[in-house]
Length: 345
Image (cartoon, rainbow, N blue to C red; front, side, top):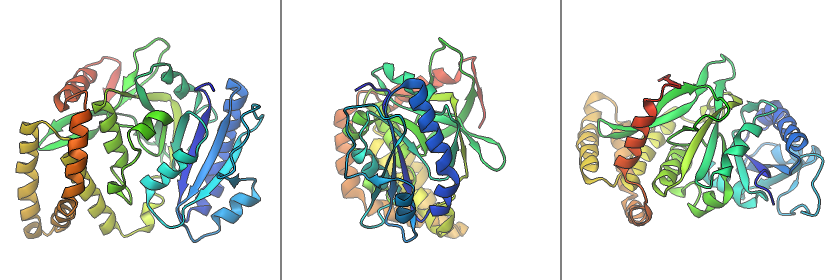
């Protein structure tokens, strides 16, 4: 089977209104890809134990259970529509993992349920996988309501005790140009090599229910010797955080801070950089209540509670790493100096 074959995996939780609004553009893009590339494309919507009528609505619109694989004997003329439902709510990462496992095709486009895509969103991404080292390629993202360019390539570097992953850059792609590299591929609009995704374990459940799981997986991929690209010709318009806005924002911030710490404790293997990290975060955790920002302290405590599992993963990743932290930061320092990108911050 050609690697042009793509499964579009869309996680959703009580997001029926979002699916009604945004799914038509995804179906149109899938059919456009079939027409232009001549290969198979499927959409797998994964309901994360929601309480709305998502499954009934999908059934009415032609989605079949993902437990019933379609035949490989012919290339469908239209997109294949499939659905999956978690028995209980497990969070974004595990829901994506379930969709990837159920997917039938070699390339997986992970897409948020609140994203509208251009008809040719997939076509510029697919060619990158001719390079066997490519783990993922992510799209260019614009904020739906404002049109702001908010999802570009991301550079990685170390500063003030933390791995910084949100230094964005803008770029325009010309034929024959060297790929644009990115420190991670967002879990909301990126094409992944399914085999490599499963090899690395997908999004780790330690980061449930959401946030930093895609950053962690991307950094793991870089350390294991793979690369991640940014493709500015693939366009997505995103209604930012439409799902997490339904939740307690204090809880969301707590989970973000906790998972950022877990990410560092698993992957920051350079002893001097790790020491710098601890010299920054431990005083911050101790002083935060005095600054009326207790969420930092609570997040630190929540991360510490997970130290046994963090230690297990840390030892595993140290043993399997092919690149060091400094190798990766040096790579992106050189990337930052390219004349064909502009830092967007």
